[in-house]
Length: 79
Image: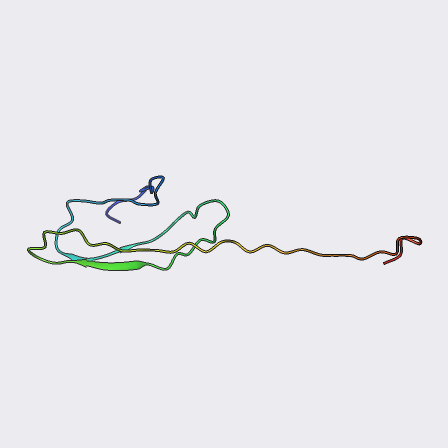
């Protein structure tokens, strides 16, 4: 673990600098409220001589809910 506790900003972005050449991965440890946590690593590589930042993306999936509907008779109240 090189860095932990990174948090995205209001736009959902986080920047990490001063990485030496090599292979890296980002792992989400906490999802935003209402979204599923996906711990699948996002892999990327920093190459020797690289002068531009690598851009990686991760899409959060909304947590799905459910509903139970019970129909009742308006006179007897029976289901």
